[in-house]
Length: 236
Image (tube, rainbow, N blue to C red; front, top):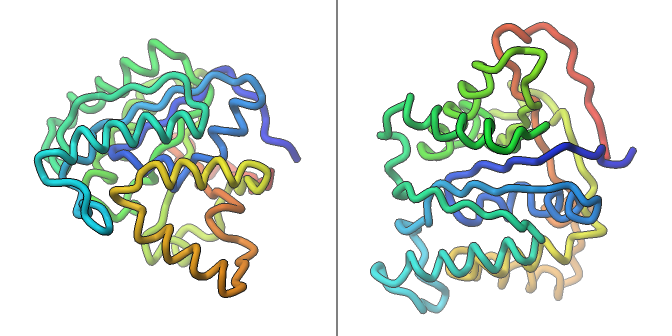
């Protein structure tokens, strides 16, 4: 099966590089299909623990570096509409819930997306991830059931497979894997160490079939009034 076309795709994550790990290949595939994509990045990740490896940033310079990295990553993914929402890293969990819901609602009302990609509530590990997932889910819940965009969540907690089962949506991104690699490389302050380790494994002859450069996986996020409805597992 091929990835279905969409009216508009909205991606919402809290930190630069969340998108590169989660949805970079899918975003590039949508671009090739001519589907408009908007990425709302809530913070600049200015509290990121890494300052480069070897270090090339300071705590003071990191916000601007990460802003430039985010722009470069979006160029690699061919995302034309990048929204930097201006919230502060590691504080989203403390923001007023209604403020966060209204931020997401405003994006939905402006863009009228047919699908939204974000994190899956309770399985996204980081407090900012969870706060984002909670706000997105609630904003979608308030839309009439017949008009809601589909909501797909990235889940990677240790108990994900045991409690949620296999992902509902699996997308083969091998044809655009090199673009995802460029997006990951663009976030060099945070991913440099990982890129070096990956390169070494490749040099050693390791070629994992289902690596993060081959597939991207999401779960359908259901609202309370949708629970019990069958969810079709699909591979694109």
